[in-house]
Amino acid sequence: MAHQNSRDVDSFMEGLKKRNPHENEFHQAVREVATSVIPFVNENVRYRDEQIFERMTEPDRIVIFRVTWVDDEGRIRANRAWRVQFNNAIGAYKGGLRFHPSVTQSVLKFLGFEQTFKNSLTGLPMGGAKGGSNFNPRGKSDREVMRFCQSLMTELHRHIGENTDVPAGDIGVGAREIGYLFGQYKRLENEFVGTITGKGLAFGGSAGRTEATGHGCVYFGNHVLEAAGESMQGRTVGVSGSGNVALYAAQKATELGGKVITLSDSGGFIHDPDGIDAEKLAFVQDLKEVQRGRISAYADKYPAATFTADARPWAVPMQVALPCATQNELSLGDANTLIGNGVRLVCEGANMPTELDAVHALQSSGVLFGPAKAANAGGVAVSGMEQSQNAQRVSWSAQEVDEKLRGVMSDIHSQCVEYGGAEKAGDPVDYVKGANLAGFVKVADAMLSYGAV
Ligand code: NDP
Ligand code: 2IT
Image 1 (tube, rainbow, N blue to C red):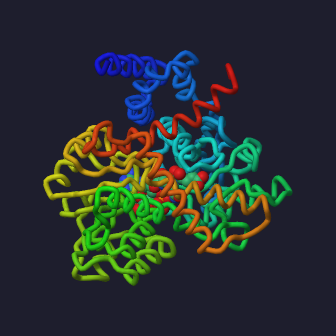
Image 2 (image 1 turned 90 degrees about the horizontal axis):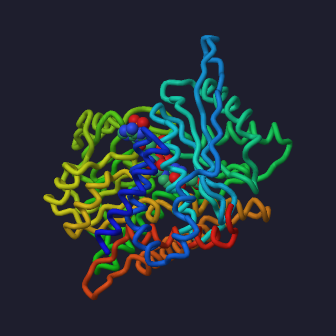
């Protein structure tokens, strides 16, 4: 049976690659899910007979468009943008927008595919989508970013809506960009509705949305540790990235008694053996969000810290690793180094930061592993709460949102245990399988109900 399953995965992937050539990130994300879902579908043949997984790996639609804008020198510039509306079986499309030069259709398809499962895990009625552009906000003035956002929304607005598709932020799309995007949306539609989440608190944003992904990731990681009889207390924690997810993951890990010793950006990483406490985090937040500077400046400010250029933090000995920057930032070699240094937990704040062979190496060495679609679902969960508050025209307090977020992360942990739990006593929980199957079943059951659509 195991052989048949692995042959079925290989032949499924062969077909997928033929239909989607050169989309390596998309292939990688689908293979990870197929490895869990195909054996399950072979045992639950109603899904197989109705071609559910085949349909779930084909986006509902992709909109591709040109974004033309004028830079500060008065020159005309053009970028490409996409919205991948992947699956709306269980709710309106929902997912972030990414602005980064590495954005391609393959990257956005992997993210939209993952988002479908992640949103299902939250228990909220949200379908999966992702969008973005190869526009690079780095080095652009506020005015240039504004003109780009306005031009992008001038096209995007006709494809989205509070009951159709609700974008939010992701890499390169933070508070500033969301303000420009929502401002233009509102102007074009002449309507004030919650079609974008991650909005500022002054205009319909939810308390706790900024913090939600990072905090949720650490809540989830702490559940994984506790289920194994351990905790975050007293652990050394390595974080990669220094953006929205990384900074709030670092904040919550510190609050739960961990000692955060690394942060990074695309220029390299800093290592602070004294720990990056709340005051130092406030410095980094100002550095990255207000000054729009580089993480190397941390080592100038705090002489006990070192900066290593063009490297990731995984060679620093750490007990908990939280990759929170981008996809494929933790390789097999990095995993083996972490294992050699005694890491106990790797919990993904970013989407697909760990390469597939690295995930296998960690799991087979007994390292606890929290996969992205479960671990970073707190962000989109609070986005869903923002939609509810907007629809009801109410605002919940930060405390209320945090309680709900804790509830969602605890529930996702339980679903992972239910679907990825030990087959025999003593086996560890397989959180990858658990998250994939729990996310799959709800979407698949909805699709079964709809018939051939
Ligand atoms: P930000 O733009 O706020 O921060 C991104 C961070 O990652 C920066 O430190 C950036 O460094 C670094 N980074 C980005 N690309 C690369 C790269 N190619 N190589 C090395 N470092 C890189 O993004 P977020 O914190 O919002 O997102 C981080 C991750 O979390 C992404 O994978 C995103 O999809 C995921 N995520 C985000 C959610 C959210 O609510 N924002 C929700 C769930 C997941 P630099 O400044 O040098 O580019
Ligand atoms: O990857 C993600 O889950 C996000 N970037 C957040 C999406 C959202 O709609 O809040």
